[in-house]
Image (cartoon, rainbow, N blue to C red; front, side, top):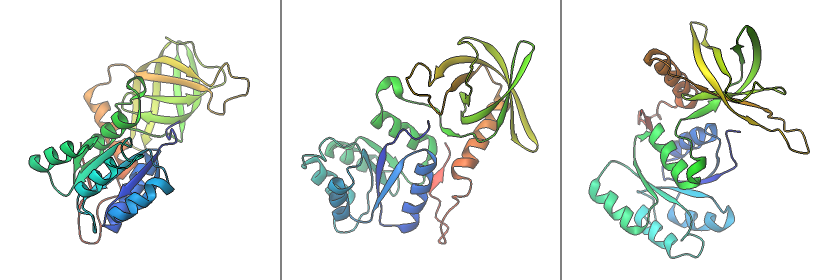
Length: 251
């Protein structure tokens, strides 16, 4: 449910940077193909057929801008979204990248929410774009509907809501209370509403039959707890390489 089967070519000359980006993108649900030079980007464009390219500005042989211009002159590369990742922010360099045809621009250290936003905008149609970061939710979730309390297996969690498995989901529009144990010392009780069902009506049973619940008016403390939890799952262990470089930041 989280993955959606998109393949991203990550091009960078820094091995640790590629490793950390690959781990984060994998946790966001993407398949990753690495490249360490502009030449490898062009080779992988045909061999791997990525859906998007994350292109560092400081590649050897051909730098990011030259690689981008070469891609845009290629029959396949002309259509593939390319996000330039600069070593540091520069408005002049951003204008150059945009003039060369980039689909988006980021600067290191990469903001996780900013990365998610540019990937969503570049890869998915408007109605399918997810503004909130999503992470797997491998735990039981308590959901109270009226006087009935049910326990459901979680699948995915975001700041905006969650998805749980259920062969007999509650009706769309149902008002519920969600009990969520984020850690041993952090439990949230959140109001929510069932907004859609998934996996029903098909000839074969969908292994992810269930329901999506949107949180309703969570307070700032609850939102802060959700953000910390999601950030920890995505990049809590991606703190930097041996040289102390910081690869990701918030927001």
